Amino acid sequence: MKRSNLPFSEDVLVKKLQLREEQAFHLLYDQYSPALYGVILKVVRDEEAARDVLQDSFVKIWRNIPSYDAQKGRLFTWLLNIARNTAIDAIRTRHSGQSIQTSTDIVDIIDQNQQTYQPAVETLDLPDKVNQLNPDRRTVIDLVYFYGYTHEEVAQKLNLPLGTVKTRVRSALQELKKLFGT
Amino acid sequence: MNTKEYIESGILEEYVLGTVSPQEKREVECMSSIYPEIRQELDQLSAALEEYAQTLRREPPADIKTWLLNELEFGTSLNTDVNESAQSTDTESAEITETPIRPLYSKEEYPNSRPTFRVTWLVAASLGLIVLVFAYFLYSQLQGSQQTLSSLRSANQELTEEVRLLRAHQAESDQTLAILKEPGTRVIRLNPTDSTTSNLATIYWNASTGQVNLEIDSLVRPPETQQYQLWAIVDGKPVDAGVFDVGETTRVVQQTKKFLKADAFAITLERRGGSPTPTLSTMVVLGNVNS
Image (cartoon, rainbow over all chains, first blue to last red):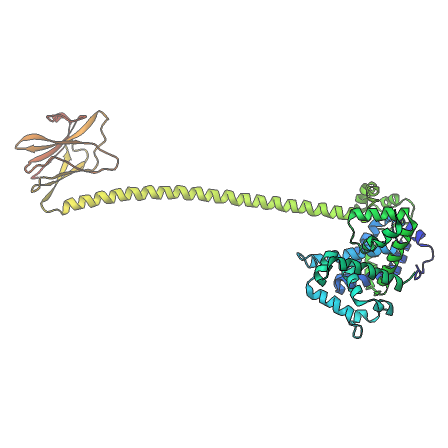
C-alpha cells in the first residue's frame, strides 16, 4: 500500500495481529480506523450509529483476525468488508422490515452524486479523482457497495434494465481502477 | 480456460462489491489462486475500492480506541492460551475451554464468533426461562379460572334448582289462591286422629260446584304398597273420594269426584288402589264440615 507508514511489512503485522499483540492493534487502528469510520459514516449517515458500528467492526476484526488469509485477499479489503457489512446490517436492522432504504434516501444518494458544484459537507474533502467519476456510475457503486443493494434492487430503483445495471457496475469499477491506477 | 474472458465476464467486479453467491465466491477464490492474471485483476479492483474508501477518511471519536483497548483481549506471548489462563477471570477461562474450536472456522472469512455464541446461548436460555415462567403464570391463571368457573357453575345450578322449587311453590300457591278465591269454597282442616301433629291436610270444598281439592301439608309418605284414600262422609256413610299419592312437590290434588253434600272428610291409609270401604283403624285425619 502506498499510504502505508508501518514500521514493518503487512505480513508481519498480520502475524502480530494473529498473536493478538497490543502494539499491532495500535498500528492497525491508527492506520485504518479513519477510512473504516468514513465508510461506516457514509453507510449509516449518523455519527452515533457510526461509532457503534466502528466498535462492533473492530470487535469482529479482532475476533476473526486468526482466520484472515492473505492468500485470499488484501488486508484492507478484508477490513473494509467487515466494516461495510456491519454497517449495512446496522441500517437494515434500523429499517427493520424494510430490506432496503426508502426512495427518499436514494434520491439523496443520487442528488449528492449529481451535485458537483454544491456538494454536501461529506463530499467537500473528496479528492478530485472520485468526482471525475461519471455520476451515474458512481451512484451504482454507492448503491451496491455502500448500501448493499443487489443488482436487481438497483435495476428496480433506478428503473433500468438489469443488463444495463450489470454493464454499468463493471464499467464503473473499471473507471475507478483507471482513476486510481496502481 | 480463457482467463481474459473470465476477467471480462464481470464476475470479479461483482466479487469485490460483495454481490456474488457463496458458490461464485469460492469459484473466484479458486480461480484467483490458480491464475496470477486473475489475482492481479482482483487486487487492482480491490485496491481501487480501497482508494475510494480512503477518500472518505474521517477521524473517529478518540474514546472508541480507549473503549476497544479495554474491551479486546491482548496477548504478548506466542502461546496465547497460556497467556489467557494466566489472567484467570471468569471470561477468560470460558474462552480457553472454547479455544480449540477456532480451527474449525479458520476457512470461513467471517466465522461465527465465540462471544456471540455465548451471548446467543445466554439470550436463548433467558428467553426460554421467560417463556417457562410465563407458561407457569398462564397455567396458574387457567387453574384459577377453572376453579372459579366450576364454583360459579355449581352456584348457578343451586340457584336454578331453587328457582325451580320456588316456581313450583308459586304455582301451587297460585292454584290454592285461585281455589280459595272461588265463591263458595270452604276450608276444612283435617286434623290428625291421634292429635300428635297438626295441620296434616286441608280440604277446599266448594259446595255449589261439588269440587273437592286436597292440599297435603305434612302427610308422611306411605310405603309403596299403600296409598292414601280420601273419604267424604255423606249422611253418615263414608263415600270413596279417590286415592292420591304424596309426591315430592305436588301439594294440591284436585279430586275427580264431586260432592254436593258432605258432612265430613277423612283420609285413611289403604293398600294401593284403594278400598271400597274405609279401614277405620288406619284413619289418619278427619275434618268436620261444620266445625
